Length: 543
Image 1 (tube, one colour):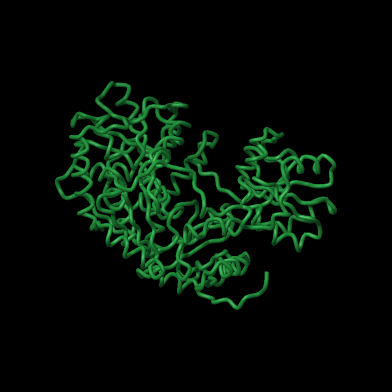
Image 2: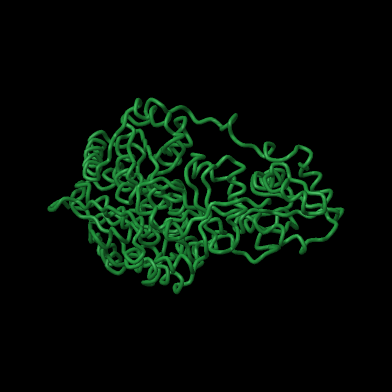
């Protein structure tokens, strides 16, 4: 990678920029494992290994200031060169490492999706969100009390494990569908997630809606439930009704409008949206369809990618990479976009608005994306691709080895038999560990990452470099041999962070440590001083 004269920016300057409403992208280009251990609050994780695959989605405007942070690992210059080659014109490197960030007065945060999780704790601290302990909830359930237990996570997470008897109502659907499950005003509604954030935000939303007299969060979610010694249910499939009765829809729409008015949410019409679209080269614009993933899979609107409202709030940094950007939200019911925008504005996204009239007239049956989508063949020469059949022959002859660039969980879930694993950013340092004369056949889940990496590796590997056409997905589709497990990593595994609330194989100590960390976020946010939270609690006297 050629040396570039780079613009440099100090940690103090980044912190000062964070206090303004100016647009900027702040990207941490380390692998997710390193990012999860210590990073600035407003940094967005975008590993150098996958930079080109995701940066256009997170940072769609080429002239927006892009600040690169690598914790002192020396990755930012390579990232800057790649971004400049893609047309980004205002790229700068944040000087120093983690120590210099601390010296500037900034805090370093662990875990991922921290702005969203810190917002949940801020809500709990400032609004006094009603909550019940696991023991209290268990006693209510055992006594047969009039209780509705709702799990507000996406269905895939709910199906892994949940509280016995809980019904799945993802956060984006809560205000829209909960009355279908809880018709009585006297019922105590208890919402929960795996930890704290989503249940706190859900209880906060219910409390501000006026729809329910009694609502509370299960304190510490399924983590707290397990820590109390209670059993979970696995493989549950209970879901809120898809159809909402007219009276319940009307009440939900009124409640959503009340939340939006209190939070200053503005609605824009098609004419203003067209103006914003024309101005997208001067002001970053994100448009999101906040309906559920199954609805999006069935029908969608051009230009509105899926970002289910509950997850958009829970993991905003996985969808929005530019602070100060315009955000247009839309649904087809007049509820979910207003609620999501209300929460985003309280989180500090001051330009979150809702499209008046929503998507109803824009929705069309979903079709497979074609045409403008980037393909592996666009990324490297055609003669670099080899078929699964050729790959099988070459590896059987021991004249080639397969190198998988997938993140370690995807690799462990199933990889080409005999394949090694290495993040793209570490390929050069890993090469000496491979047989010296063997051809390298790169693969990745869909082949895109392998096609990106092959041309840059070809001139430096001193051996032939090829790409498995179609990636590991095609190998698997042809029912060729797969291996599972950690296999053959060429560098220490640090490319992913396993959340303590994911899966069922975490120790109680790890789960309790996670809860303790969440509880300490409010104090850390105070010390850091760059959060933009603007909480709008329910009016006095409202349930």
